Image 1 (spheres, rainbow, N blue to C red):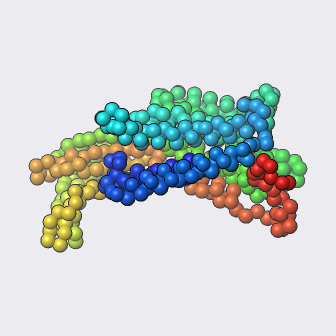
Image 2 (image 1 turned 180 degrees about the horizontal axis):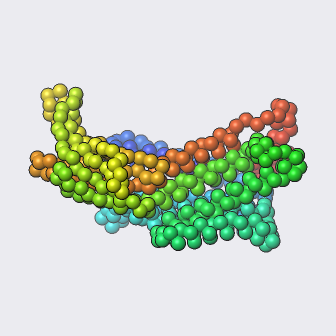
Image 3 (image 1 turned 135 degrees about the vertical axis):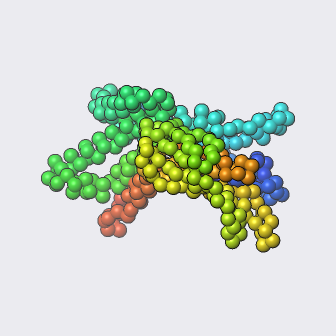
Length: 397
């Protein structure tokens, strides 16, 4: 908790002080010194208090086995700390390298991808492993029984992707682990529903509804896990992003092959220039076809905003032409016009599975609502079920 709070202050300090050049940061400002002083004061005060209270925070329980649900929570926390540290290290490395060596070394996306993708995939795998492991200590027969179906589903998913000639290692691994986690969730829902049907003789839909209603935190958590799987699969789609640049005259075409196998054809129809209320617009119109079938027109623009006297105010901005569906997003960007003619430079980009990022987020929100939805029962019953979240050593019982 202390670390999270201090990191949030540090993020504000980095953004407002201008010590790191970024599109998200402000210019260098004296306010950064105030944030630095407050960060130092908060760190000293927090860790002083933590050190003084440390003897009272001794846990009563002990980790009995590394193959247990408690160990799963521990590994989960360690992975999250590792991801946070890698982002912190990559962010501060330019400052540290300049202070030590006198040369600012910039850390780009390849570093964060190389470090955080494996950690993220391990975190995804834990969302499927955790629910299958018993508390305290797991026996070998129990592990075999619990993991048989999910592991088979994950391996089968990976083999299917290999047969479909998917060769990106991390994308294949993400989708295969996603299959494992989804199988875990389905197995947990199926077992719970089956047990309730045997006990109460309820129809399957009613048994499922009552199962979730009586165990909101558990099964709402499984819904959240499903949303996380959808998010990771959508992120894996970025491995198949396709981008092409072309310089076209009116009537000329460029072709781009989609990751799904079909071929897009983009035909430049011409450039138009006109004035609007506060900007000068240069627009290009593109005819889009997929495997010969016309999909429609896309317009991409360069906009130069002007003041009341017609003078340019900022750098020209770009309006992207977008065609979107559940499988992929198609972006057409006008890079510029060549020498005042109608010949123009375009960038064509295909981003697969963008919609599924939104779907995954909505599933996560749905799971969170299930978890937080107020439970039934009288106040007396709720008071009887209440208990300590944490008991400090030496506290009277």
